[in-house]
Length: 175
Image (spheres, rainbow, N blue to C red):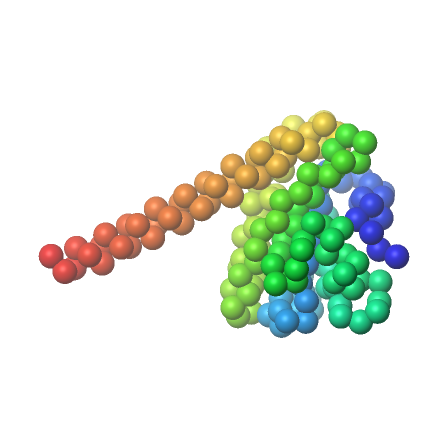
């Protein structure tokens, strides 16, 4: 049976950084499914994940081992209405987990890929700032999440600034 602890054990055998990502979605997210089934999209996402692993988990509605009732609570997700998400998990001392969830925009296939690829790139950029000898350390998890949050905030600030500039240009057209 799949558990988050099993993912940690599997991740440990790859010798990568103590960070991994989970793309969590349901059958209600057909554009995410298309992106994940497309070999070119998946290869592109995989190429962006330098030194960390990205998994895709689809909790189903039947009585299999990945039911919503089983896997979502392990990730602290109360309802599948919160999906789709990119869940970033940093493994800390004694296998404690520090987790952040980021919504994936899935209004169409291209948007779903761009949203996911952008977030994966941000995680990779944040992870690249960690000194190599500390990348597999369990003590680096707080710094990894801090770097990730700073990168996400920077991206959000840039997007808000660009939207503000567009608004000003639009309003100037009325003067």
